Length: 557
Image (cartoon, rainbow, N blue to C red):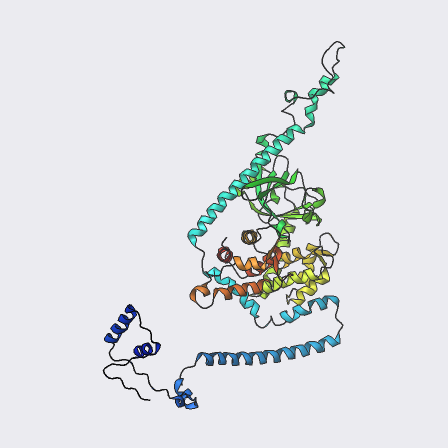
């Protein structure tokens, strides 16, 4: 049925209102009318042509220009390239595996070879090209090109100097108090006066009690004795900072401050410990006494002023110091490395003292030159591969160390050098082995062997490595969870992130992948592994400040 309404302009709103049977509110009606008056010509909805929606190949060619690729096309092209590279890599791997299988048939594998099989797969291509892990590790060198904020760096350095001087002053005061008080009370001459009184006859009618019953008072104590120390005698000393050479993070990060006294050639070492935020304590670590070298060319010789310089090692028998921590008592020797020393006082004391030169100085110099020659040769072989090789060596040594004492024999070191393609001539290896195996037991600590053959970064760089680890290891457990490292690592100031070539997450993932690649635990990193990583990274960095920027920038130290 057709209905025709005359004189009224039909609109969608009017149609809806007529069918709903409800009157709109006045405001809504006014709005609708005003909008209709402002837009007298309503848009006309075109008729939908369903036939035109059919896809055709001609239309696809018209939509995409010939000289451009869509996002899907770009990803497809990258996928094809990746697929080709994977095929070539698998083909190369199959050939290598077949050659290796043939070579294994000709000889029987030893237990040492079985442990090193997985390292061979990693190391067999290092003579040709860098691996992906090497390239990811080299990304950390980018921080050296982006200097740390100079103003912030200066402020932090100044504050660190103030804190360090305050620590040294506190320790020095405690040492003077301890030594002066103990020297007077423990001196045997204190009994001289009381012994004379005891030998005097006591009258029967005297009311004075016998000396054995009476207590000695302070007035009866002899303060000035012949062997008592004085403040003037203790002032002739050289003060130095030291650290424990250990892969245990808790021991390696201990803050040790030592003193060598020239009046009697004795030394003592104190530990500065911090409990909580506001409580500190100064505890004796090595008691004041006269000590001698326990290994090396100077074994059995007493410590003298010439033995104290930055980089020198001080050796002690752990059994002579019962108050040492249990983790240190596990080793026969306690080795301390001097990291800093009061050079002005040292130079003034050297001018006053007279020490006899002997042939040991020349022998030690020759030993250092022999190690330096080997280190220079290996430095070329470690070019851009230091991180992977040093971390891999440490893990390999730990796995073949069945006794867990850190000592390995000569054959183990020879096989390790061949396994990681570190070429050392037989003459150089024999000479270095004779120097390191000074006790003649046929075993050498693999940490000492690695430091002697490959070398190590200077103490200035290692101080920043310890600062970074101490910031991460806030619980002082000696190991840092990967989760905490991921939270604390900041890659915002990496040059590639700033330029937009890569993202912060990619830099962070590359660091974590290279760091935990050769860790003994998948969920944590120990201090030794953390130090090995930056030890390998330090080989390529010539300037100390560039290396410091690599640590300061991501860790904020």
